[in-house]
Amino acid sequence: MRNGPMNSPQLYRIGELSMLAGISPRTIDYYTGLGLLAPAKRSTGNYRLYDDETLSRIRRIEQLKSQKFSLEEIREQFTSMNRVVTDEAVSRKLSDLQTHLAMLEREVKELEPVLDQLKPQQAKRLFRAITPQTAACVEALLLLLGKSNFM
Image (cartoon, rainbow, N blue to C red):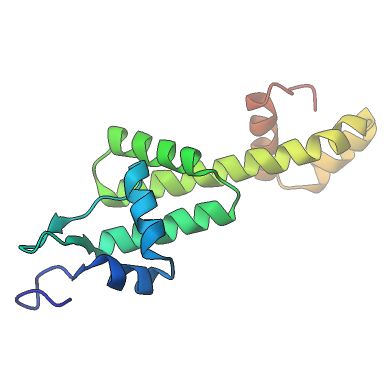
């Protein structure tokens, strides 16, 4: 749905948005009901109109879902980011960082049983074999998880 002059933002009805995002209109309604999405505005015929930011947000939701985040976790991330920062670029960067840290935490938790079985000499050799920055990151994550006895 093209609106006004060329510099006006692109707005989409729910059907158009659903085709672009590759999800059903019903899913868009569901995400809207959960507070994950909101229409940019309503048309004179009372149709909900969504913008490109909504399309980006849907893609972000689908990406996070594929990484095994629940819709509740995704909503909490969006809510916390909206509360902290309104600047879109900073908000997106912080959200990406938060997602990356959550993935790293999950990976470290998967490594815990292996790391717990290492003898002290094996652990020291392992840490000498990786870069100091990587070792520092692993140690920081272990500290966050309450497992600081690695070194």
